[in-house]
Image (cartoon, rainbow, N blue to C red):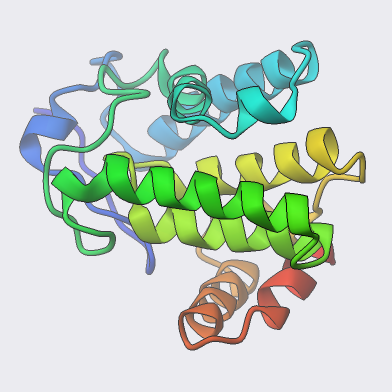
Length: 198
């Protein structure tokens, strides 16, 4: 029978090959999938809390992949692997490694030169990594956790509140989040920073 997925605005549909990567075959409904993914993500967050995260480790392709793997490895076979297909969002998949390296180089430069405030650096990273769209799915949640890790472990500041939501439910908060992402696409990062801080 397989899983039946309902996509909300801003979510990336999985193709059949990616859906076949589901490790828990008893999952057939979206809410079951959301529940299993959330438990997996909570374990990953616990791992980040109990790991000594230094800037050089965080700002690496290896860590970016490892975090995604830890977020989804109990649910998806492809957890931590870059996507191999085109999506409704993101760059062409063969360019992922190059663009990710450019982003890592950029954030190191921003940090070293204090180009932006710590909050803006973390949010700029979050936005750019979503634009790259490294993974088949989970990019939004992965990018928010990366922003939290950057603000906390590199800048020693409180993690973002993200409007006290994980943006899984299709509600007003998620709509507001999608709107702020579109604002950044148009060159205005401030609403997304404010969203992350509130």
